[in-house]
Length: 122
Image 1: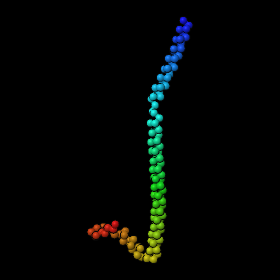
Image 2 (image 1 turned 135 degrees about the vertical axis):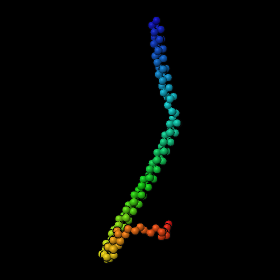
Image 3 (image 1 turned 45 degrees about the vertical axis):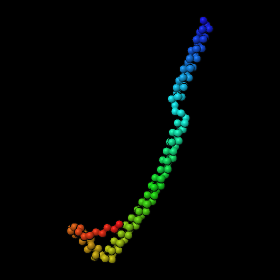
Image 4 (image 1 turned 135 degrees about the horizontal axis):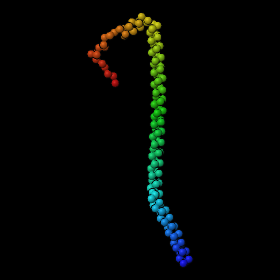
């Protein structure tokens, strides 16, 4: 009887071990194969490289636009200064004409003549 109990215990231990092996095999089989995972990793890596390159291009474009904006703002400021200097010069040199011109602009209620031909320059 003792021998049968020992055999029974060994059988139960063996059975538990095999159940554990089956669970481990099921977990391994449920995972993706290594070559498939490597393919996905390579694909994502290529996408990241492409996205970085696109980001760098956009960054360079933004820098270019910022430089262009800075140049335009400087030109606008220079034009404002020139306009103010010209206005000041006119007021100092031709004070009567400036006053008459300002009055004619403010007091002239007539609409502009729209029947005149307009030349379009392209």
